[in-house]
Structures are given as structure tokens and as C-alpha cells.
Length: 377
Image 1 (spheres, helix red, strand yellow):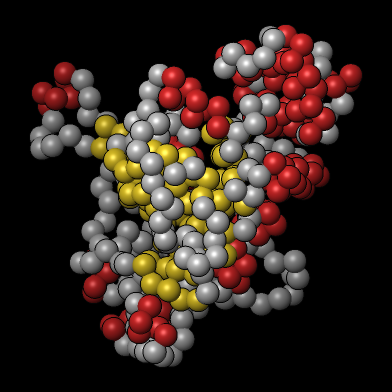
Image 2 (cartoon, one colour; image 1 turned 60 degrees about the vertical axis):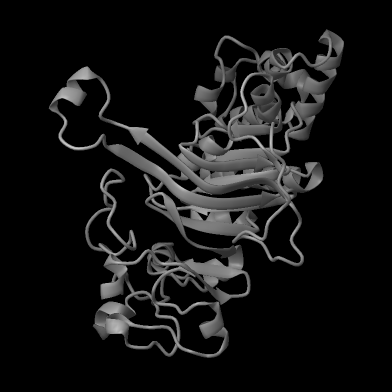
């Protein structure tokens, strides 16, 4: 680990009160080349093409907090999580763990980093070696990192299983195929915790589980975050679970964040047209409640050929001329609530009462609701 950085203001934190982040990324990019090989080089016209999975993201996660990441499939959520824990090498940008830069560490430095930054994958069955018992699987990270002797490792394995409510006498010697889905995911979480990490990426950890056991896993993640001081990046497309456990949330579209803030503020008062469309798709508990239907035209553009200006403009019901020419800057729209959209003025204009702009640069008296722009245009 090389350079050290003092915690900066960053777009995700209240500058006065928020604690220092356990992990922080600035300008993070991950591009995957697709025109590789000799034949591709011979037939290709123009520069090599790349998939811009992450294209300039700033993110910060504090200890004892859960940061939610929401977006459609293919928006770059999982890639961001894997890049933060260095399972993907970043193309550009910087990653800091507790203020120390870890973007380019290798060898022993990377090993130390991975002891402190772990990931929980989506599929618990695919995450466990079917030839290892639960006890052996949980002990394996300790062996890899050379932690303790056999007796010390056995104690830590037992403690880790007890933390996730798996009784060691019942589960130590079982194999993955002998466990239920929820038990397998708890075993994966126990393996993650045995190294006592500071930061954990939870990549859709309940999407493969039955609805009846999802709440138990979510409660476990929340308890562990608070009790052990973990910073957690929770990746999901399920907004209801994000509201349930996350302190802050970011909305991701085509490799970038478009909205971010306190979870309740963003979900209850979505500002970006894309966020509004996501919220409109969440089922309501009351079947008789009325709600404006929002339909986005077309499909998500390919990350190989990203639209100019605002990336959402090809599907946005509030698109304006400026959207194709200028990348939207971050604007404050509420306490700890920011949005990257041309519909909103900058922070100074917002605080002075200047209204947001509508279609054709006509002013909005208040932030538009989903579906309003098409009707106004």
C-alpha cells in the first residue's frame, strides 16, 4: 500500500459530520477490450473497441454502514464491487482503503488488502467447494493467509459459524449439498468474516434464496455491519431490500451514478427520471392504490457505444437539447441528496429558489414526477 490520503469531502458525505470512509474510490473506471487478437487487429477499422462497464465513479463507504447500489442488469453494479476488491484491475482512477491507496498494490500488499476487503457472491452453492466440509471451507482463508496454528484456526472457525447462527456441532462436518440455500449463504458469510475484514461487497446475496429466508440474511448483514464495524456495499436490483437495510444508496445507469443520497430521501423523493421509473416499477402493497405508469422506450444502450452527453437521454421522457451535448453535473436537490440531471439547477440556484428547467428549457415549479415530461412536451 503506497500513498496515503486524508478523507476528502466527496459527493457521498456530509462534510461536517460523516465519519471517514473505510473504502473510497475516485474517478474509477473499468473498460474491457473486445477487439483482441491478431485477426481482430487485421479486420478492425478504427481504434480498438472497449466495453465501458464502469466509466468514472466516485464512491465512499463508511464503517458500520451499508451502502446500496441499484440499477438494471448490465449497469455495472457487480463490476464496480469486484473492482473495489481488486478482482478486476481498474483501468483508471484510485481506490483507498482506510486512507491508503491500494489501486496498484501487488504481491504481499495485495494479499494484505484482500484480507481486509472481502466479497459475498450471488450464488452460495457456486461459492463453496463441494469437496470441502463447511468447517474446512471457513478455515481455508486462514490457511491461505497463514493465520494461527491448527488450534487457533479451529477456534476462529467456531466463532465465525456462531456469528451467523450456524451451530458448529451441527454444521462443521456437513458438505454444501447437505445445506439449505439460506444455510449455504450463512456459511459463505462465515467464511468472509473469519478474516475479520473492514469492507465487504455483498453482491445480490439473497437473489438466489427463497423469499421466506431473505429477511433473516438481511437482518444478519445489518447486525454484523453494526456489531463488527463493517462497511458493506450492498448490490441489488430489489429496491425494497435496499430500503430495508441500507443507510445510503446510489442509482447506477450504464457505468455511472445518476443519483445518490440517504436511502429514504432517494426512494421517497426520486429526482432523476431513471430513478423515478425504477420506483414506479416497485409493486405496491395496496392493490387499489393508483400510480402513474412509466414506460421507458427502447433498451439500455450498449456500453460499447455510449450516447454523448447524458447517457439516459435516449430513453428519457424529459430529454432536452442540452442533454445530447453536455454531460450533466451533480446538483443538490435535498439534504444529502444529489442528482446528475440537466432538469435541476446547481446548488446555488436551488437554494435561491430558482426552479428547475423542463422540456425545451421551460422552468419546472417543482421537480417533475415520472411521466410528467412527455405530457408537458
